[in-house]
Image: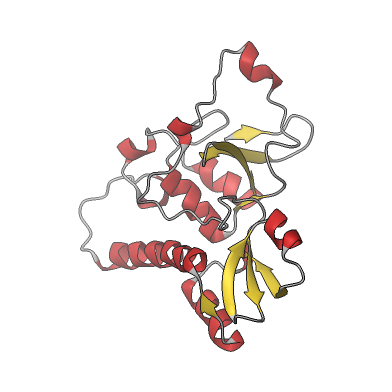
Length: 202
């Protein structure tokens, strides 16, 4: 997690498909991290970032690291290894068909009656084929996604199906945590993960 140098707020840098992706954090998202011991400069697991994405508290803007001052990284000897910070294949990261995560929307293709995740650039290139689109951070529960698809009569493509997996995975984990018998009181890690997992890097 990092703090903007030229404006208020926080952001997270992660590696996706060989690129550095900037995730802006809402005030609530940054507060959630700091309350769980993740402060500026601290690395944390992808699972926690995915939870913030699901909640709508971490989101992408324009491509690359625009607006982020990284001049002090080289001075302090920091090197951002993209591969080291990429998610595993088992982690359901929402992606456009082109592989980008920038400004994802759930877009409705009127001709084919399908829904797909599209980044900023792909939405611009296909604007004549899109009937409507909604930012993914506004559709952050399985029921909201299912309601959108059913009311519009849309069939989800692979990208939307993967996003639904992310939403369902989180919801399932929450239900399991409520149903499991409680053991002795132990302070749990961020989003219910064991403390030792918090030490793993993005």
